[in-house]
Image (tube, rainbow, N blue to C red; front, side, top):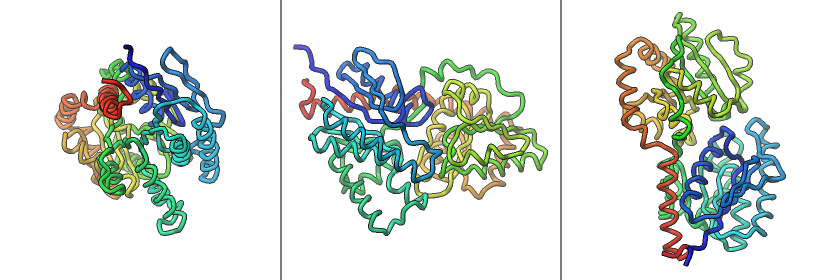
Length: 392
C-alpha cells in the first residue's frame, strides 16, 4: 500500500530568492522535505514563488515586517501577519506545521492556532525572544509584561512536537528553560552548496578587500567597521572595505565619507556571493551582549563555503568554532588595535593567509545547508514514524 503523504505547512515571513536568513534556511529545508517523498508542503509567506506537484506557496495578504521600520510599526505588521496566519491555520487542512521564529509575534500566534486544533508543530528558533527585546532595551526584563512573555515563550516550547534551533548556546538555553526538554534539535544554518559551488574564487580584487554582508540592524557594530576603515586610511594602508546589506543602521553608511568604504545596500544572493568571492577577508562585527554571544551569523557559513578567512566580534560560540578549526579570529569589540593588526598581517603575510585557506578547504563540506537539511529530514521522518504518523 502506498504511503500517505504528510501534509506539512510552513509558516515564515520571507522565502527564497530573498537574501535573508529565514528565506534561505526555509528554502533548504523545503527542498529536503520535498526530496524525501514523504511530504506535501504548503509554504505560507509574503514572497511569491512558483508551485509544483508537491509544493505549494501561499502569498500572505499582509506584508512581512521590515527591519528598517521603527519598533512600533514593525510590531504592528508582525501582529497583522500573525493574525492572518492564525486564521489561515484554523481552517487549513494540515497534519504538521513548521513555524519559523522570528518574527516572534507571528510565530506565537501561529502556534496558538495549531494548539487550538491540536495539530503538532515544530518551533524553529533562529533568534531568542524575548531576550532580543531585553538586549535592545525595548522591554525591561523585570516588568510584568516581560514576565508574561517569558511564560508564553516557555509554553510555546513545551507544547511543541519539538524545537529546532541554530546554535548550541540556544539549544542549551531552551533545554534549561524547559526543564531539560529532550526534543530540542540543533539544525545549523550553512551555505548553499548549489550556488556557491558555481562561484569562481580564482580572481580576487586587486586591492586587499575586507567584506561584510547581512542585516545592518540593532546588534551590528557598524561603528566598529567604520573606525577600522578610518584607521586603515590614517595609517596609509591600501585596504578596501565593501559593505552589503540594509537595516536600521544603514543610514550611517549612506552618510560616510571614508574613502576606502564602498556601501552597496541590498543585493541578490548570487551577486553577494560574487562580491564575497573577490574579497580576501570576511568580517562579522556585532555588539557584545547575550544575543550576539549566542549567535552564529549566516554570513560566517557563507564565508566558509566560498573559502574566506574571517574576523568576528564579540567572543562567542561562533568564534570558538572558527578558532577551533583555525579558519579565522575572534576579538572583543573594543580591540580595535588588535583587529587592525590582524587585518594588516593577513594583507602582508601570504603564508598566514594560505594556512587559513587550507584549513577552510578541509572542513567546508561539513557546513553545506543541503547536507544539514537532509540530516534533519531523516530525524524528522524517524520521529514521525515513532509517533505513527508515518508507517514503517
